[in-house]
Length: 263
Ligand code: MG
Ligand code: MG
Image 1 (cartoon, rainbow, N blue to C red):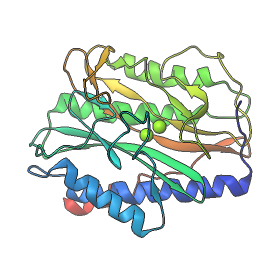
Image 2 (spheres, protein in one colour; image 1 turned 90 degrees about the horizontal axis):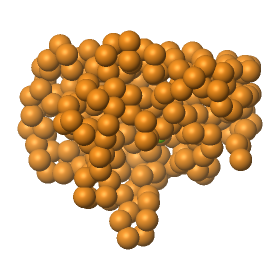
Image 3 (cartoon, rainbow, N blue to C red; image 1 turned 180 degrees about the vertical axis):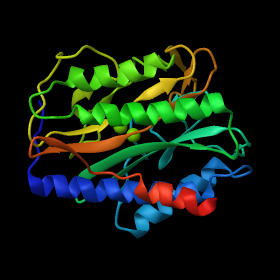
């Protein structure tokens, strides 16, 4: 069942999404060679708790193997769901940081891929195209369109640039639950799938590989890596349909200001 949200509910999701944005901005300032991912995780958790939020990912999943951290930090060949470790970041790495926050009963969930120091032009292009594909997908989030229109736009752009589109992991509805219906694949056909309606809130999140689309899971039960070991990028926004059009509830503005101030 798809839960359509009222304007009031959308504002609560926006509040949580913007707390994620500000959390990612704190991370953005600290991403550099030598930094331990678990330090970034600690900063994120403190910021969320200090601002009345609850880390949305910590404890997620099965009782036997709940996700242990506030951030998913996925480095280089890690696609998503990376568990923060003590292994310091190195010049030339890329890290995809995904964060969830619950506040007032509603979730925000978005992600950004950062360069650590200087990265190769090839990997920079992967990051740029992944972010572009996210915005091309969002443009299709119009009342009367279908999920497949979003999926198609993302896939087209990524594949046109020679990159692999992950199939097994998808975007999703968002609200009182971190993952709601409908699923939002990053591949598909125009005109396929659920019709988009006023009040829908989706987390759109292309996961794009430099090489092939294939992935596997590490035996920590969480981290997803590319099968060929090549890097992967991930960007995620939370988007509502308001007055028939897409409105992005999360924001990269805080993150990109933080990155520009570092230069
Ligand atoms: Mg998500
Ligand atoms: Mg996410």
